[in-house]
Amino acid sequence: MNTTILHAIIRFVVDEVTPRKHRHQRGYTILIVSGDSDGSIGSIRLSPTVTQLLSFAAFFAGLILLCYIVYSLMTINGLQQIKLLQTEQISRLTKEQERLTAENSKLNALVDQLSKSINQKAVKEANAEQVEAEKHLPTGSPVTGAATMTATRDLKDADTIEEAMALLNDRIANGESIDDIPGEPILYFTGAAEGSSIVATGNGTVSEIEADEKYGKRIVIDHGNGYQSIYRNAGDALVRVGDEVTRGSILIIIGESNNTLGYQITQDDSYIEPETLAQIDG
Image: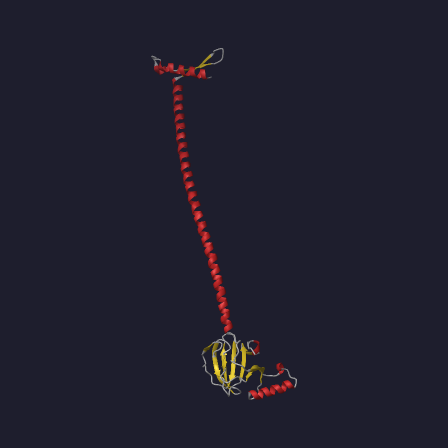
């Protein structure tokens, strides 16, 4: 087949270069020489019109092929540019993600640190509040120094401490329980040494200082948490209504004539047993 095509091309060239008188009537003949042993030859005669149409068709086909090739090259180049831009964008986004991940790790560490600090601060504040709240509980001893303490009831039909104590002893001796004896719970402190003091049993504010028919004077401290402590003694008050006091603040100095104390506690305006709250040694 290669020999056949070569012969056809040679024939085409010869026809083109051979001068003819009537060139406008020139036609083209394509010889097809078989490569077989018989050496048969075939030919195709093309008219000028067909030849021109074929030439134009070949030209346009070549032009279209050329345009397609150019378009393909431009498309490939554009795709390569897009791929390059995408690669750069992916690289940039990857770096940005790594940066954000690192910052997120730092922020998480900072959040953990702040959370721990806040928790520690909350614990400290809670402890401080608890300590402060405990300071406002009337749990201290109302008398400095040694004294005899008796848990009993404040009898309304007794005019003095001595008379109240005598009546109470008689009723207990007759078989009555202290819980069955009418009257508000009270702690009697007797025999306190001269020069010792009656002190506040917790932080608070002096809310009342009034005369007391049985004891001489009545001082009330409001502890701001529902508790009030009451100190009943004949001595001179060293505080005034409105004064802020702390546990251990001196309220009255004990002398020869005022060495007894009646101590009571109320919670939400109700009397309670003072010894259940007071922490008194001895």
